[in-house]
Amino acid sequence: MNVFAIADANNFYPSCERVFQPHLDGKPVIVLSNNDGCVIARSNEAKLLGVKMGAPYFQIKKFAMQEGITVLSSNYALYGDMSQRVMLCLSRYASRVEMYSIDECFLDLSGLPQDLMSYCQTMCKTVKQWTGIPISIGIAPTKTLAKLANRLAKKGYSAHGAVLDWQTLASPDAILESTPLEDIWGISRRLSEKLQAIGIDHALALHNADPKYIRQHFGVVMERIVLELRGISCIPLEEMPPPKKQIMTSRSFGEKLTSIDDLRSAVTHFAARSGEKLRHQQLSAQALTVFIQTSPFDTQHPQYANSATTEFDRPTDNSAQLIAAAHRGLQQIFKTGFSYQRAGILLPDLLPAGVAQTSLFDIVENSGRSEQLMATLDNINRVHGKRTIRYASEMISKRWHMRQQFKSPSYTTNWRELLTINI
Amino acid sequence: MYHLELINTCHKPMNSASIQTQHQHHSRWAPDNVLLPILELSQFPTFVDLPLFASKIPAGFPSPADDHLEATIDLNRQYIRHPAATFFIRVQGHSMIEAGIHNGDMLVVDRSLEAQSGSIVIAVVNGELTVKKLVIDGDEVWLRPENPEFEPMQIKDGMELHIWGVVAHVIHSFSG
Image (tube, rainbow over all chains, first blue to last red; front, top):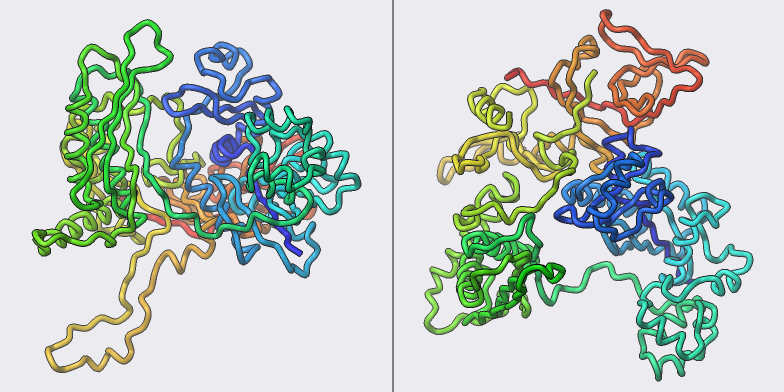
């Protein structure tokens, strides 16, 4: 029989911050989205105070101050590094793992001779000691049930602390009956409304539904969910993430931009970053779309959004070519008189690098040199830190940089920002 | 303050650290677009390969040492046994001088190690981080400084002590 476990970090972003600021233990902490826009992570204490996920920061600023809530900007360098450490730790406990998100990891525990419960408790203890990050583990014969078991463990249903094994539940049916459809992995609000329209109100009703009927009306994906709820594993572990079909690099700005120079700077950066991502995944782009938009929430000012797509003669992973295409596109769509809030680069159609035939008129030697240049560029930036070498037009303006008023130091990824202790 | 730091660092001699990785002195665009060498970002883990044997090979004559060439030695592999659990921490202050930890030193902390009486530990006392020697004497638990000018601290009822990690190594640079 299959045994899946999902290990999920508890309140991952606040937990990362607490490792380096232990005085925040037991205190309410919230983390804000890029540009300090809205709440994207809360410690349990902040949840208890009633801070809602997604709440705009300006709306809760006063409340946070009154209640002594620690407010932090997101620190993705730190979270990414801590995530790698947690995953590295977890992978010691299973031969096959799927890193599902920054703070979730599926493990294949099939055929383990040991007592599963104590095995997983050791896993939790080790991850906590090694990295400082608390995790919860759900165990079940399918990934869908493991996700549910994990939810229950977080809610305190387990007699064994942070670990819950679905197979040991006394009355799984009663639990399914009290589980809303939207709490099931893969069921969106929209799907849940459709299911409710035909009288399927909770997880147990879906569990009992006829798989064939469900397949006819909702397709094979929903049928799999029904079977998974019944303990029949249909969703395998994905050890290798499927290759990306597109690459998007986009961000909203710290302040609204009005000049084309500011936008050009931002777009250059996004294009260069897209090029790095392409080469890292050994892909090449057949086309590039550049887009700019004003804030859709700003009703005071006129709104505008547009995009331009350039197709390349041959698929490319060369940053200079991407940047040139982005500049041309921007020139076409930019209009004066608007306050732009967001821009981005989309590479919609990707091919594995090297697939493309060089045309008769290519100067082969030259194309080899461009690869060499890109490899050198990537290498320097990897060894000496991101953005050590940049394209000059990235530097024209800094206005597009993110607002991160409350960011903690990059404790684990920057020599100059190491945790410092006074002794 | 940021600017001062940049300028200071760039005038320091960078080649006299007792343990120093290549990645310590890098360049970065300063705010006014001037290139200055400063301490910069590094990927973790880093690798510094030092060949154990190296010989120049005259054309046509293989060196007699070649048969003895071994794998390169790597500081990270030697001193960082558990990368997932290893953190670098900077210290400020003089309370651990007799343990060989000086003001400004960098500690290599391995959280996978179990703290024992006598271990140099990163401890959290009532939410505050400190570096001290852990001494367990019967029922008594002490955090002891390694400098006679500082007082040891006994952990008593009502105090919260949490061992954050065990200091595995200290890196001391002579460049100050």
